[in-house]
Amino acid sequence: MPKEMLARYAAMTEAALERFFPQEEGCAGRLTEACRYSLLSGGKRLRPALLMEFYRLCGGEPEDAIPFACGLEMIHTYSLIHDDLPCMDNDDYRRGRLSNHKVYGEAVATLAGDALLNRAFEIMLSQTAVPAERAMAAAAYIGRCSGVFGMIGGQIEDLSLEGKTPSERELLQMISKKTGALLRAACVGGCLLAGAPQRSLAAAEQYADALGLAFQIRDDLLDVIGDAAALGKATGSDAANHKSTFVSLYGQAACRRRVDELTARAVDAAGDFADGGFLQALAKQLAGRNH
Image (cartoon, rainbow, N blue to C red; front, side, top):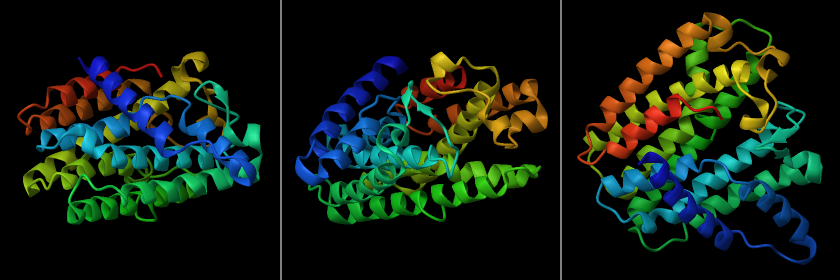
């Protein structure tokens, strides 16, 4: 079930992204080409799926949430483009293809990220299917999760920890922002769009926090034990960049146990929703993924 529903949400997202970010001509042509190169390069479309599913669980029709699902995917894509830049993680490959800056150059890649971020909020705040007050609440929450108090704040903390041995508290705080924040934006954002009660918001946040940490620890494991062809990017980058991770601090066995514990916590949080079976199955699927 989770693979089929995830594929259905991904197809909805792909079709909408094509509409929301068309190829331009003239001066803007190379920039939109660079945006589309990364935006339409595949991927799990996990965040759009979570946003639409939480919106559905709280009484909405998933199609009405597509502008927010696509906006969130644009934010995620811009963050990947910038993460791959030489001044950040300096990665040459992403999803099995050359990174954006390796194809279009650092200047265009930087501007492509900027363009995706701005287009995301333009699309979210231009929709008419969801009442304005709910749309504003969701957009504000997504903005906070994306910025200095969320994903970007986590990125700067990640950079500051390079070459150091952080405490578990520092590592958890960084992951909660860098990886977890956009997952919270998806889960809680979907609930806010639907005007869900506080209990649902709290359960969505608990699910996202457990899923996000489990996802990152699994990602750290795959950087050590994963197959580069399956991952679509080089392995061993954490060690090469002198980054401390849960794997380097506690070892592989302890990390596997931690992923199992966190997955169980996510499954429990999803149980607060009457039809949360997809969320539970998805958490279990992601815990054992190989890419």
